[in-house]
Image (cartoon, rainbow, N blue to C red):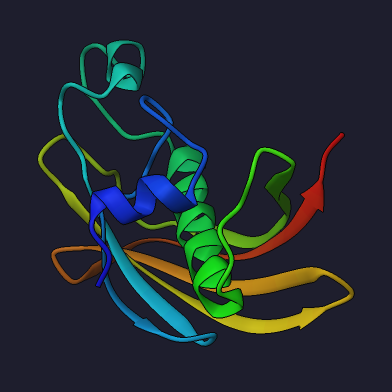
Length: 146
């Protein structure tokens, strides 16, 4: 379990781009389950779509990538610093099963598939009320910046 205060220590993202509210469980180095509460106050709802608010699919993928980063940081026992960035390196097999609307709670399950040559590959599934809304394979890498 990890609350928002611990998440803020590990992820560099801040409002409006922090997409994880709480970590529910971690199986160190293997899998993680986290949640995001989707509120009508999210800034993207103003334009996506004014007549029918729907969470953009790319933001669900971003949320799963942030959850993957939390899994990696926990497994390595490190805290990122100002010289380290955890980047998205790729997305495969992304599927969106139904729209996510204000009031939904995303439950994201991310599992490490493999890690090789500094690139980690994860399987991610996001559910609302037990129903799959998004799934994808995500590739991420940690890089040092100047």
